[in-house]
Image (cartoon, rainbow, N blue to C red; front, top):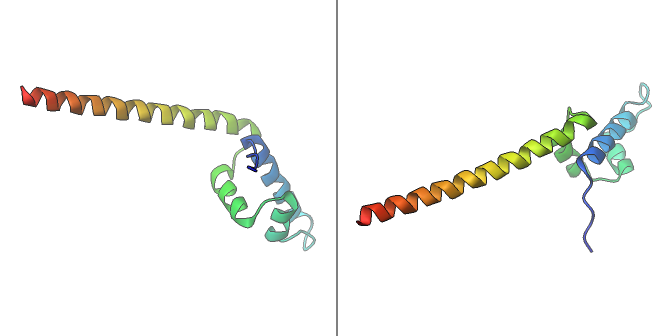
Length: 95
């Protein structure tokens, strides 16, 4: 059975929740390990999420993901066009 991946907005909310748990009061906050367990993720997942979504706010996440998808689509288009160009150059050389 596969797990459902959280949406980027949910990830940012969980990271904020973990920050609150770690930062509650002087000496009263939880450790990072306890906070990550409290939000239901592993420390490795927390590290990866913080690396990707670290300083973002909830309203900034969706545009970033849209831009990444557009960038991926354009890279694929360039790769296809480059391949077509190489094929045509090879065919022209043969004539």
